[in-house]
Image (cartoon, rainbow, N blue to C red):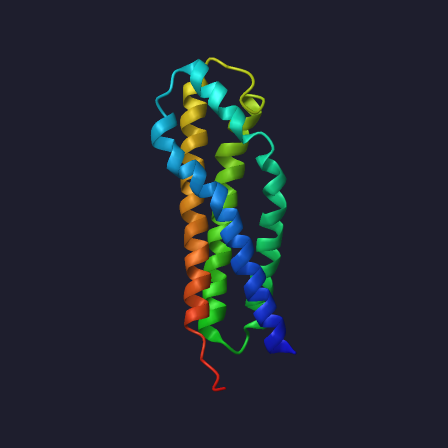
Amino acid sequence: MRSRDLTLALFAALMSTALALAPALAHLLELPNKISLPRTDYFTVQQIYRGWSMLGWLLLVELVSIVAVIVLARGERPLRIAGIVALFGLLAAQALFWTFTWPANQATANWTQQPENWELLRRQWEYSHAGGALLQLATLTALIIGVLGRPRSMP
């Protein structure tokens, strides 16, 4: 039973992390093309992200499933360590979001209002998203390494 539960937790952790990484990588990859856009163009382009907040539930699934992996991998030290590293990656990405991205969203009313310091807010928003993407990538990498390092059972 514990083996099946661990397998399910790993599946959920890998899948939710991969799905959460997709929009994060989109932010990272668009940065070079957006960072120097003029004000009007930048605010127009930012509207493509409307509705992306609905993906926030993935982060909860990711958190719960990574914690489950850590708990269920008690007898598999390398997997447990990989789970802990993954958890730190997720928490660090969230710390970046709530410290830098969220305040920029609030200051601009989700990029519908153009305050005087919009360029500072743009850099804050873009680079915090880029950092979050790299941390999510590290989270997925840790989970994959943990899975690949598991002992193989003979059929």
